[in-house]
Length: 69
Image 1 (spheres, helix red, strand yellow):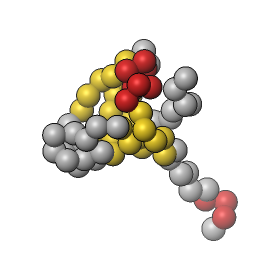
Image 2 (cartoon, helix red, strand yellow):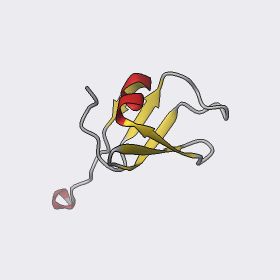
Image 3 (cartoon, rainbow, N blue to C red):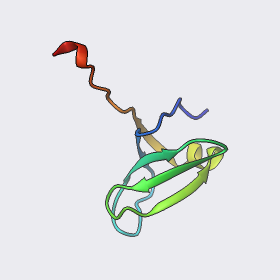
Image 4 (cartoon, rainbow, N blue to C red):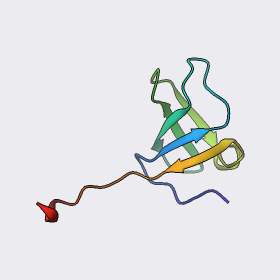
């Protein structure tokens, strides 16, 4: 099962992109998941099933709370 994803989360896929990058950022959620390569800014759409198969690691976005300041 695919982990609960939010916009701005980072994912690491099993195979590297032709540019050499492994890290992607989630930019679209829906039936398909939109990803942007953080190395070359290439955009791709993957189905949830395909992303689940290719996913190696999910890194949730850290939100900074302004109440701590």
